[in-house]
Each structure stands twice: as C-alpha cells, then as structure tokens.
Amino acid sequence: MKTSALFLLLSLLALASCSPTSDDPHPQAEGFVRFKVDGVQKEFKVTNTPMGFTFDANGPVYVATSVVLGPGSDGIKNFLNMALRNETLFQSGVEYQMQNPINYKGVPMVRILLTYANESGQIFNATLFQQAIPGIKVTDDARWKFTKITDNWVEGTFEGVLLGPFSPTSGRGNTELIITEGQFSMALLKSLP
Image 1 (tube, rainbow, N blue to C red):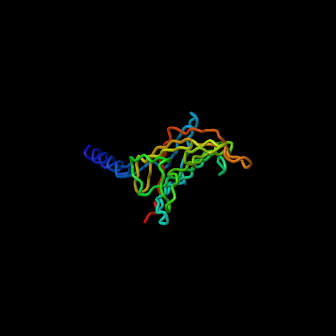
Image 2 (cartoon, one colour; image 1 turned 120 degrees about the vertical axis):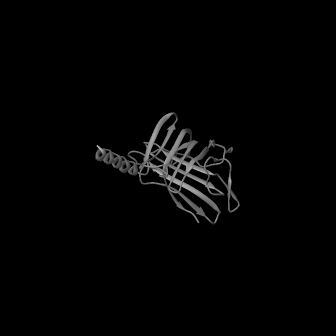
Image 3 (spheres, rainbow, N blue to C red; image 1 turned 60 degrees about the vertical axis):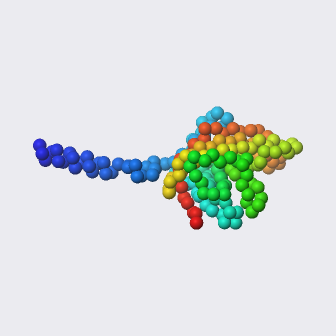
C-alpha cells in the first residue's frame, strides 16, 4: 500500500512538472486575429507570422507591424496588414489613435495604417488624415490597444474605418468598410536597440 501511494505521489509530481505554469508567458502554440467586417466575423490563424517591433532611428519612431494571411490567401486576397508608429516604446493599456499624428523628421504622419483584402481580392485601407478632398471620401480612422506585451507574445484590440475598393483605373473607391471587435494574440519578434 505504501509503495502504491508513493508511486501515485511521484506520478502526480511528474505530471505537474510537465504542465504549463504561470511563468510560461503564453502556452498557446497558435495565435489568431479575429475581427468583424461590416458585422461578419473573420478569424485568421497566426502560425508563422509574428508581430514585429522595430525602431527607425531616422524618425525616430518605433514601429509594430503584422501581415496575417487568412484561409486560402495567395498574398493578394484575404489578408490583414496592420502597422502602428509611435514616438516611444509601446505600452499595454494605451489606446493609440490613427488621427493623432506622429512627426517623422518633422512631417506629420498618421499613427496607424490598416489594409484589408477580402476573399475576392478587393483592397480597402485606412491611411489618410480625415480631410475634405473633392471627389474622394476621406473618413479613414483606426484605434489600436495592446492588452499584453511580453518578451515573446503580444495581445490587443483594434478597430477601423477603411475605404476602397482600389481600382487600377480610378484609384480608391468611396465605400466604407467597418472593422469592429478586432482582437489579436500572436508571437512577438523584437528588433529594438
């Protein structure tokens, strides 16, 4: 009986040592990006495309970028490209807003860039400051918040108002595409000084 109890105790200890611990920053093997496009749920698995944190000393500006391919994407359809630029290192809990400009070498630039291509390859983006331009609708907007940043994993939320679709003959269309309830959870690759 004592031998059985000792064997059971050792077995439980061995199993406990193999399970994830609270020190494990993110035991999940696969990341994701989830969002709604005009109310329709989209989910892209993130397996080999981490978010990157880089620093451009010429600006100077910190940049977070990620390109996530959806199911069946061939690189020109069904993808989401996200980029965030900031004067300081990114922080959890801070909401970054596209229309709050950063200065790159003294030139004001939008803080967030979002590009989405649907399953048909129609491309929509949010890249411009809101302004009045004759013949073109410019209601671009986006928000981005990190909810968790570790040495090798990042999570957060996002939303945006994108315009398009793009045409080689007429340029950007005036159709708004609304992205809501955006969430991301993925590996992080840092290349910072």
